[in-house]
Length: 147
Image (cartoon, rainbow, N blue to C red; front, side):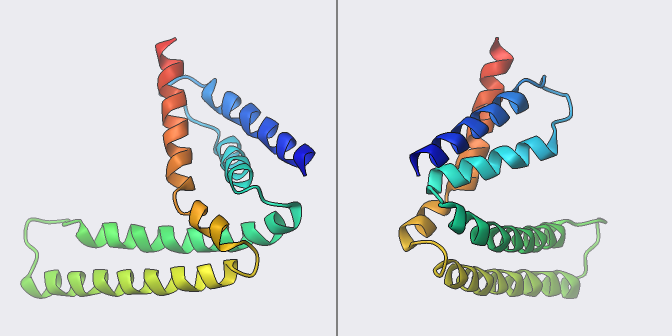
């Protein structure tokens, strides 16, 4: 178990280093960034290989669904022209609430599905890991930019 965790940590740091070696303003390598995110989450949750094999398809499916819903909510808030009828605005707000309710149901199903793979402590820790990873990448980029 320790060897597996050390290997994942090594992969994580190599991927972060490679990702961070790129200069600000250059296009980032999406595959390397995704591999670094996988290593980061796998390491932080201390997933066993069996857990990881079951976890990632569930996580990726939920994450894709969540991002589609968030994009739709963002698009609903955008006004393309200066005039938006009251009826259209009312409809957009109603759809936004629909999406929010759907996202809660989706998350409840995701947690239920995950509970067969992870412990509830791991599920709780998962909550902030995506944000923590984004913060970590941002801080690394800032540090590299100062050098």
